[in-house]
Amino acid sequence: MEMLPLLMLLIPFLALSFLGMPIFISMGISSLLYILSFHQEIPLLVIPANMIGMLDSYGFLAIPFFFLAGDLMNTGGITKRLVDFAAALVGHIKGGLSHVSIVANMIMAGVSGSAIADASATGSVLIPAMKKDGYPAAYSAAVVAAAATIGPIVPPSIPMVIYGLLVNVSIGKLFLAGAVPGFLMGLYLIVASYIISKKRDFPARPRATFKQIVWALLSSSFAILMPLIIILGIVLGIVTPTEAGVVAVFYALFVGIFIYRELNWKDVPRIFKDSMISSSYIMIILASSGVFSWLIASMGAGEILSRFFTSISTNKWVILLILNVFFLLWGCLLDPNTGLVVVVPMLMPLIEKLGIDPVHFGVVIILNLMIGLVTPPVGFLTYLTTTIAGARFEQVVKESWVFILALILALLTSTFFPDLVLWLPRTLMG
Image 1 (cartoon, one colour):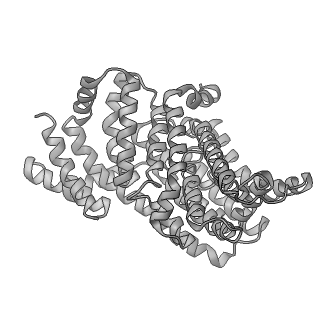
Image 2 (image 1 turned 90 degrees about the horizontal axis):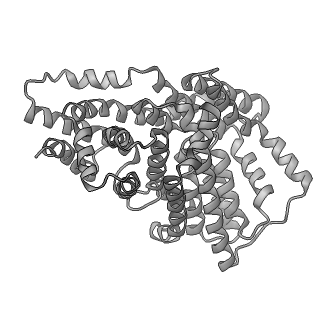
């Protein structure tokens, strides 16, 4: 019976979400219904108070700044230069452009921190090029969508900023912890694309000369320096994550306008507007989760879930496997951001009790949720690249399964070999 209050809060929320109601409205209505049904003595003023209180944190300013920096860099000519650099490195391998899309997204991941931004930027360049070289449209869309999931794993990462602020974990350590899993995701995806390319005899491009590789590196160097500036600034304690976001915005403006000269002042208002819309979507979900999380905390849901899971097993590896399955299923059905802001805080008492490192747990859960962006029926990245490619959704899904399996392999590696995730933050930050 102790699970009943939690279920009475979650069931209306899940029902409204499945009906297509926006997530923040689903959370708000289910919270209101719960209060009116079980706690009529609570004044309704707690709803706006908790919504405002949730966002009353200096750290959350990092989110709109990182969104804006990514949009500025994507518009300022960075994508083409990074694609050229990736093509110089791996374009000569069998199935060259599919490898280029993966490597380009690995590098882009260090710029935007957003999977959707990466898929849109690289997809608009690479998918038409792949189709022109004879790659099937569905395959082109599938490989770009899968590669874009690396974006929020390799630092900087907007989901890691959210996770770090929600559960009070060092964002700098989270950023560093995502480096190796992000590399593994790219490596496994390249292996998968190579096997498919050999089987289907996809084309390769001429091998780049050493001079061409050096020129491509120099041309994209300002873009590659951006994540290094951000990470070093945070790790060395020079800037906070929010201040790093501000630095990234000014750096992106300077590079786009004065170095690459592909960003015009007249484009800046539109970019500001687009990034405000993108970040406001995250912010309104966070605000609504303030009420939701307050109700969950007041009913002791964290301890309830902790007792429930430990009744199944007290082995942390078994629990991590169960949570992986849960979040993979969640990603198939519901928005990943919701899983981050609603479910993860509830699980922290369990994580602490089992002695699981919260940095390791954060990387694993965010990786889970990113896989959800390419799994049907939600699969927002798949829908996005399908539209760019002009392909049929079911054909893209069919092409995606090999890449999804590669991403799950990276997830399992990161889950059950935590030292791979934690050695970099431990080495550099203690």
